[in-house]
Amino acid sequence: MTEGHGLKLIEPLRELFKDEVRELGRQLGIDEELVMRHPFPGPGIAIRVLGEVTPERVEIARRADDIFINMIRENGLYNEIGQAFAALDPSRAVGVMGDKRVYQYIIILRAIQTKDFMSANPYPFDHKLLNEISTRITNEVDGVCRVVYDVTSKPPGTIELE
Image (cartoon, one colour):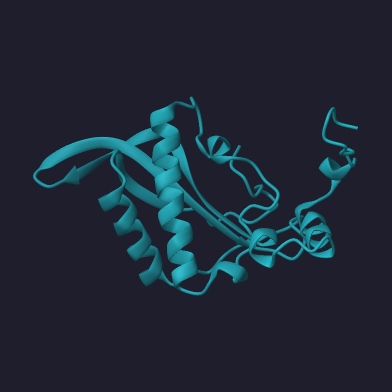
């Protein structure tokens, strides 16, 4: 039992796969919106910052992810996607903002369809929506001049990038 709280730690939850944890969440009566959260369960935003994790880079990833997830929701696609996120690549790219060249970060978007999280395919977004998402991220997130969409299936890739 955890001291002073009268709670017992239930293990081995960490050994369950995401689809199993979601099913357990439903059986426990957890609200469906929380059970379907991307990810549930899963890492915090820092895992989506490839390379060195700094407060500035975490904030860039958080803001890009917020735009991506909100646009997925606004387009009614959220529950069709097993997991979606925006990650910050440690490399930078040349871009043009206004009348000047910039050297800024790249955001990697990832969204997958899956039944069991053991295998997955990239979500087949409409290119118009991907363009809108990219435009919003590059216009609204300082430090980002390029957005790419990861179309790698699992396997050979994994769902997360790190």
